[in-house]
Image (tube, rainbow, N blue to C red):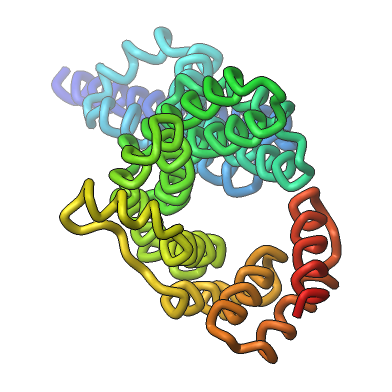
Length: 336
């Protein structure tokens, strides 16, 4: 009797052990089938790196959800075999996998959006660019917001209405201000704050513009610190120095009266930053060549001025700005 009872108990234990193994085999097979099906559907949409991430996540989820949930108690395994079918398990896994993929999808979408935005900017399609980015103005993304500010500023310049220009410039300022609040270390946001803060101050009169000139300079200096490989930032800093050195006598007197320490700079300082921009990225901007030539003229260095003004005059025209620069350089060369 005892032998029969022991034999029955042993058989029952073996049966439950087999069921446990069968349970895991079913689950693992379901996982493989699910991954093959999912990978086929997403092969054209996702990169190899993303699909690898899905596989890794699914494997991790399988270990956590099943290997740890089912302890070494055959009775628990046998009761759950009928509850969790392979299809049910796959459907239960899908939301978790979808959740893991969603951030990657969003990241890729943002990359594509920014890439498209930069292409449109380089094509000078400013209105189309602005309309594209306006759809995302509610998102807390500094990269999108400073690009929206840039596009809005360029659209403002195309307007023939002074009131509309002002409205668009102030709108652009709001976008870049928000971008800096979201990401204070974003060099491009600082660069566009330099441009738009000065533009905003210009609507409030000479006193406000001079008052804001200190903050304006701080933003472009910060942009240069954050990204010393950006030639445009050094060009803009040089332009600030040149503009201050070029201030008419009357404006200098007004600045001295209004402020204990008015903004000061020199042509030498301006030249330093223009040349630094050219060192970072040679021939990157026709206007930088023009400004170097003009600065050398102010410093009475005729020979070097001719070299850079000739470069600006002969620069390949890719925009209306290049054309303006070409014409100004030719005029200055004829006057030397």
